[in-house]
Amino acid sequence: MMLDVPIVLAGYGPVGREYAELVHRERAQWRDRYGVDLRVVAVRGRDTQAEVGAAVPPRVQWTAAEPLTDLLARTGARVLAQAVPSDGSDRPARDALAALGHGAHVVTATKSHLLTHWRQLDEAARRAGRSVRISGATGAAMPAGDLARSVLRGFDVDAVHGCLNGTATFVLDQLAEGVALEAAVAEAQRRGIAEADPAADLSGADAATKLRLVTGLLWGWDPADVRVELEPVRAARADPGHRLRQVAGARRDDPGVVRVEVRPEPVGSPLGALTGPEKAVRYDCGDAGSVTVSGGRSSPRGAARAMVKDTIGAVLEATAGLR
Image (cartoon, rainbow, N blue to C red; front, side, top):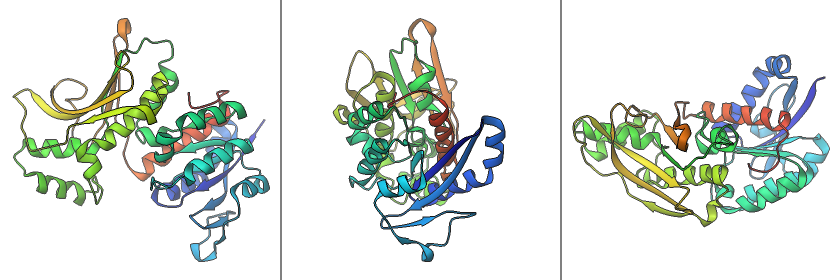
């Protein structure tokens, strides 16, 4: 039996465009492999929207946006996919809560409302019997969120540590080679690794945000209540046999605290072995040892892939809420 999955996509920037393209291009293989027929039926911008047939029409053909609940009802959407900027507005939260109330799953790469409305989203999803999936917000194509949300269920996870910002890893490696901080950042921007404003990367704020979400999945911490301690990236060199890494960490026995520090890691360790803009997260699982996940491209395509994976998981797996 084929499961029809109409999708409303909110946000049509780089990640949203990649998501829509992947859904359209690989629709047939997912029908054959998983028995799900994913199709984006509408896209929404800030104030406009468009119906989607064979392709997303040019923006000049988009019309004024109708209320989201009306669009969801008219299209029969089973999923709201969010790829909108984390600009501090409350619209992503309002849209997600409206979609859950309408009976749709929410798949999001947007972080802002997860930090401010975690508990409300979880409660609304559980009431509706629907899922909120956030892989695209926790590490793009690296499945750190999946380990925290479901794969490590039953494991006694004592602590989690990770290099969650590729810009910081790249810049620290450049500093170790004697490159000045300003020049290292400029090179990261030239290669498309760093944002135009790298402040959140270098301060540790971006890594802390991602780890706050991971701790919510792992231990049920509300990200809004988590206290953050940050150490910024500065010009420095590590001792021989080590590499400096920006490491975000949290411990179960120190609830509600996420720390980001720049510290030496042995070259042969999972975090010390990273090169360039790579990322990794290590879960310390008590008597089961450590479990580390690394890799996964940080790019619009990587985030879109994570959203597609979450979309398929949301409709096929009988889970509700954020966890």
